[in-house]
Structure formats: C-alpha cells, structure tokens
Image (cartoon, rainbow over all chains, first blue to last red):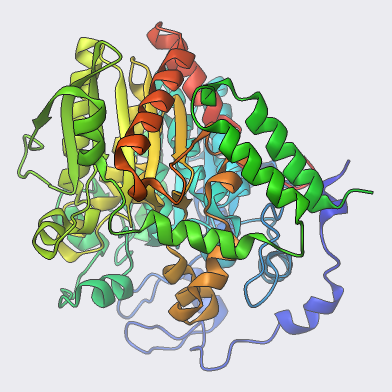
Length: 283
Length: 312
C-alpha cells in the first residue's frame, strides 16, 4: 500500500500555507546587524551575512547543494511519512500540521538522507530542516537517520549528519522520545562495524537531537553562533530565574567547555568535511 | 460491531493476559480494571484516568528509589560521585543483592521535605549525575553484575551550569553506555519518566513501568505551554500525548506493567516494593541470554522497531 493513502488531502490547507506569519522579520534581513539582502546576494555568500558574518538558516536542500559535489546526491527513503499514532490534537490536528509543513518546505519530513560525494569523498548524508515543524524528531526522522547509518555501515562510507532541530516531536508523544535510544543504537551499530560519524550542529540543535545522535559523532562540528543546548534559553530562564550569560548555549561557549571539536565557517565546511572524510578513511 | 476503542482495549487485555512477566503479581487486579473499563466504554474515557496517573506519579508520598532500595536490595551499599567533579544527589547508585546475586542499582531520587528536595534538586540531574550513572554502569559491566535502573524525574535539570557541563552530551552518552553493556539490564519507571533525563538511564533489555507511573516526551505543563500557549492546559496536553502505562505498553515502549497496591504505591510502600521486586526478578529471568554480543544485538533490535510510520 502506498504511503499516499494515509495522507490527508492538503488542498484546503494550501491557501493558508503561503502567508508569512505576522510580525516575523523578513528572512533576508540579518538578525545580527539589520542589513538587508536580495536572494541572489545571499546565495552568493552561502547565506552568510557579508557584513557581520551571521549565518542565516539553511533548508536541507540548500545545505545539500552547498556540500555535495554537483549531481552526486542520490536521495533515499523520500517516501517515508509520519503516521498519527496518538490521534494527536492540540489546537489543530497533527496531520494538518504535517501537511502544512510539507507544503511549506517541499519535504516529507524534517530530514533528508542519501548518499553523495564531497570533493570526491563518498559519504552518506543526513541533513535536517528546521523549517519542517521546527526540525522536530519523530518516527520518520528517527527511521531515516537509522537507515542512513545502516547504509553507511554496509557501504563502508562515513555518515555526515547536519542537525537543526528544536528536539523531539511532541505530537508523537513517547514514540518521539524513543527515537533518542533508537538513533543512539544505530550509531552504536555503525561504530561496532568500524564506521564513522561526523556530526555538524547548526542553529539550533537542542533537546532530543542534541541528547542523542548529534552529540555522538567521532567528530563534532558546529557553525558559528549555533545554539546547541539541551534546554532552550527561555526554559532555563523561566525555570531557574538565573541570569543567562550572553553566549548561553552557543557553539562558542560549547567549544570553550569542551563539547565541540571545532567551529567551522560555512564557506569552510565543505573542505573541512572532505578532509575529515579522508582522515577517517572513507574517501 | 465493536468500536475501535473496544478493539484496542481487547488487544490490551490479551496482551496483559499473555504476559507471563506479570504472573505472581497483581495481574488479576489490572485485568479486572481493564475489563471494567471495557464494559463502561464511553466516549474518550481515558483523559481523566491519565490525569489521575499524572497525580499519582507525582504524589509526595510515592516511594522513591531509596525507599525501594532498602526494601528490595539486600545489603544495599550506596556509591557516591562521578570520579570527575561532583556527587549529584539527584541520582543514586549502589550495589545490592537481588534474588541472591549482586546487582548494580541506578535511579533518580526525589526528596520528601524541602531540605531533602533541595539536596536532591527535585530529582533533576546535572550532567554529573549521568556521569555518576555511567560510572556505576561501567562497574556492572566489569564484574558481570546485572543493572537495574529506576526512573523518577521531571527531567534533566535545565540550568546554565548544567548546559555548560554538557547536559545533552551526557544524556546521549549515558544511553550509548547502556546500549554497549555486556550484562542484562532492566529499567522500571516508578514515578515520572520525564523526557531525555529519564531515557538517559532507561535504555534496557526489559523496560517496565509501574501501573501509575508516567513516561513522556515532555511534561504536561511544558507541552501545554508550547502547543496551547497556556501551561494551565496541562490536563488537555496529558490526555493528548497519553503518558500512562497502558498506552506506553500498547505502543511497545514498555514490555510490562508492574501492578501497584489498590489506590497507588504510596498507600502501601511495602506491598509496592514486593510487587516491584517480583517484576524485576521476572524481567531479569526473562532476559536469559548471557552472551555480550547477543545481548547488544537483541537490545538494538528492540529499539530498531520503535516508532510508527504511515502505511506500515
């Protein structure tokens, strides 16, 4: 049975999907310095602000286009879709949120996986997309990540994961939490077979994704300014009433405390990954 | 024709009935309760029951890890410290005897009065707590002792220092350590199984849950604050994400439910401890395998199938 049958009819929803949320800043205005750019200007700089160095968020497809050798990426498991195991309904039903996210991003869920080469070095890629329900990890993200591990293991190539996630997907309840041990098990199996994992953390990587595979890389990298905390700053401020340091949870702070191997500028990411693939013996 | 809810309940009943793990414990009570429930099937009967579980799981008189440690584990000796920088009192580790053999115990610990609560940080561990747990796991591994973990936490502590000390990485590594263990492992959620902070010590060959415990991806208040934009809607959130034991069993997240005395574990801690002990012994006996590679393979296979996809 095709997965399409259990998906909802999205036509009605598509009317709403295109409207930008009120009060949200223009996506091409730099939150760091307020400079404004045209799309083509930002594309040329890999969506990094030429003025202050702020790294704009990237969708999964844009990220893959920046990292993979042209034409080398072959996607896998793109047909996997979330079910609604709890018949979850908050202010809106979960299937409606899924449909809207699919229309907005063109993706089936919050991760895109497949094999690719980076400067000629073959690897498996697992790239998350924050635009799909905040990059939250539910059954599909977990399953696709695990399959990427398995392919990396059997093809004896390294896995490069690029995470961007608010954490586990609440709408899948306890099954979302189970994706933590599920992905941890997959990394364990990859390592047992001699495979390698390079984990790249991008803004933001928080909650369940940070507390599972993203922290377990042989090498862990982050983009400048990426928030990587288990609990978000708002939760910490509300719960503890502590004054948060300016660099709370940021990659720069995490590097200082020893949780990261390196902070890598976006333009350096491709050559750095290529080097690591060679060093880890996959290329 | 049976409604979908009725079919689900029937399936639950048959699952519970077939579970030999619960033989000897108060299974008949649980069966009777579910049968009652089936008989008075109304529209969405579970919301209220779920909230009752939330309240019982957080009941201030509910037995905590150390209450069970002294009742279940003969000769219990507590081990302190992560051998790095601290002794996190939100996590208790120790050696004791269960069913005539030495086991290692790891569990979260809440406090009962204000002083104790502060000392235990309300059962919310820092990364140091998970490193202390990993140290105890390594000890179990070295000596071939089975590992028992008891889960009871609102979540890992969300604080500035906790983040600086690597909360996310510690939770990830604690899970990875549990996956790697070459000894049989059993986890039981005895109160609140709060998110990553809970699963950090709950990756086991057999995972149990007490009848009135909850196990969830986020607290009802946290979920309500995000999705309803109002923490006061916690009841609605709990009814939506279903953190109760029966739902966790149904979703394959736990292997068995451990019965509690009528009215909840706090009404009779001794009886609750006896039931938990029986559950732990049955689960350990059920793991059987002693070959490390085989144990790891089976453990991974158990988690490999977690989750539900469309059309599958």
